[in-house]
Length: 79
Image 1 (cartoon, one colour):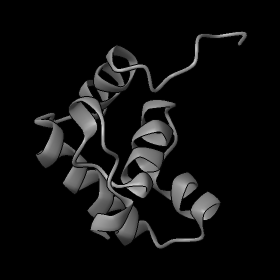
Image 2 (cartoon, helix red, strand yellow):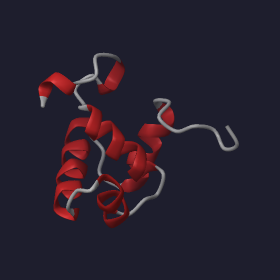
Image 3 (spheres, helix red, strand yellow):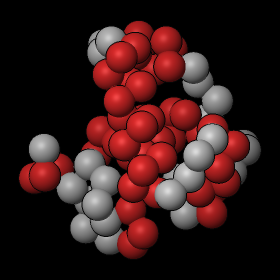
């Protein structure tokens, strides 16, 4: 849904849900854990992950983590 698009920074083309999945992936959650928490299917989470890798130009979970950390999507430990 394009009306959910975030309007700032390098993630301007990501929906709120894509950002939510980005953060959960970067936190180390599995596709199954994310699906359970968001009440979605694993296939839907895989689709979001695929969109993220395409939109952000990353290929792996490690690169998703690095992207999220570099762009302020992960809170410092203990905060």
